[in-house]
Image (cartoon, rainbow, N blue to C red; front, side, top):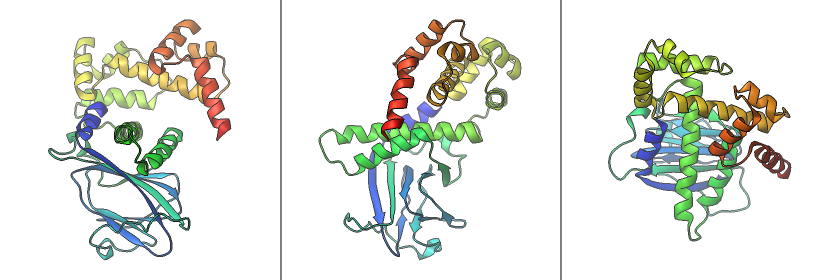
Length: 290
């Protein structure tokens, strides 16, 4: 499902801009045919939605606008109707500013955003995790990069941010556009018991379906088969353990249900393109460098 959502967005035009403000200011982002997001890098701007109360933001928060609804930002919690009628671009880039946020969107020249986004709120705020933080740095760099190749690099970064953002929302709040009650039960069960070594047969039992029926309906609802879904979650867990613990590879393999360290390493390499030991060393060196 997420792949379909991103593929639909990719049919549009990726745009990014870095916003820097100081003092008293406000700006409006008009309605677009597409999806957009903003990442707060510095300061404490106020999000001003078209409906509802303004929201205080802080560095490390992301604002997702899945339907392209109008909204704005300001130095204080002003009413939406008081915002300028058109977007007020920030002053020419200068060294003196106390707020910075990066904005990006996919403008769809035709069609509309994917149906799976229709059930989401008009505006969503989420804290940035480690992965989104790194992607936000890349987005900020490409927002002001006019060198050759930037037209290819920017959509790739926006794709990665959108994929990770939708996965975060799906993991925390529920399944995007999944109406099949049996599949919803399966996804909820896995999410509520993440350390259990689930099998496809167990998922079939939760859904009350045969394995064949589960595979067909699960793939239709989520865009990936139940086996691929379980494998992705298992290896995402492995990456987390490698990054944040000193557990030996053999113990991680056993916790994730692999018979041997070798079989775990082979599966991890296929998914991440790097051996788990080298992945751990790379992540440690990256953390130390920052």
